[in-house]
Image 1 (tube, one colour):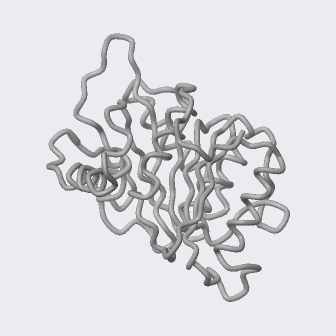
Image 2: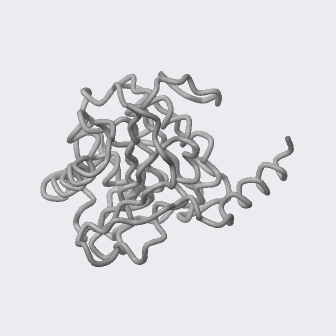
Length: 250
């Protein structure tokens, strides 16, 4: 299959009618502004449970109810519920009341649906900052991490500590090579510099991860570029399926 054919098939899937995404359940009982869970139109076999994935918005906040759909498409046909939280700014540390809020969302879902006991956490930019730090703060809650184009990372040169108790969690991380701006004027490094520092830390500490940079890409890295590795990370973390892509470190 050529690269062009793969691209066409991926975007055909992205643009297909979402009839299988049966409904959204809103955490505030009213609308998407309080966050929601996206439910697949799939009946479980007897004794089967849904996996739980989390799609964390960027620093601009949750802007509509489209978030989570692309992630669910990438992970199909796995039976996955996608939690889309709505955080106030300042959530990027991935701990404290915002971590407690996400855990509360999971508990809310678990009271209504049969689910496995860990979450796969995905995010871009500010969402990536939350995703990887939440895994370090609560490794017992996380099956895998997909974090891209973060404004800052944990580690020796970062904000927050890399928790070695999270070494059993697979990480997928990336950044555009042209993402050479600082996320804040007083940031210690540019996004690409900080990504490279964090990647080196994970390698030195023996984490299981796939890390890459994207030539010619800036901050807005499309998920289509890493969709294959994202699903591999999910399957490795939830089922122990060995990734086929070259470049996974362990």
